[in-house]
Image (cartoon, rainbow, N blue to C red):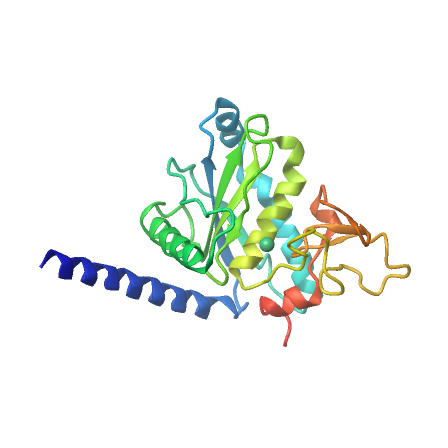
Length: 257
Ligand SMILES: [Zn+2]
């Protein structure tokens, strides 16, 4: 009896998750109205430094992201006033499930399920319009965590976990990481070599036709780095050094494929 209830419950969760995914993907390709992105800050290390950083965050801090997506989408014929609008939700006390560092397919699937389950029951609805996309910004004190684990945006899942430093001096880079994970949740794919972190040519280059090809002046958002030479690439320090390339734009529905 107990076993049957358990199986029924698991099936129910699976159905909920599947339906959720299906309705989410219906939202993603339209761009007829602006989408709301809720940002939930989370203190990942429990430190006072991270607490102070989060306490000082305001809605205003994320305006450069709205401006960035406005400018970039206009390049691809989107005529919306701020197509992606950010709302800062109150901080959460719960930490999202951790993705294993090199997951196999089963682990990755399990994590996706856990993540959806966590996202479904944890955060309260933030003030303002109901968000279509939710990003969980987990902040770390760089003195305690010098190297961040990987951020993960559920592919077309409208949910992302973003690992960030609680350091004002890194705001520009943080914005780029948030923008990158956000576009994953809308279906954009990575455009860098996973082994070397080098941008892939030509889709990972902001200006693939530039002569000479190196050094590039900008980073393509889903490559995440400015290619300086065939073996060197630099993380941008501000969104002004980042562009959305035509392949990424097509993946998120900004351009007819
Ligand atoms: Zn990525």
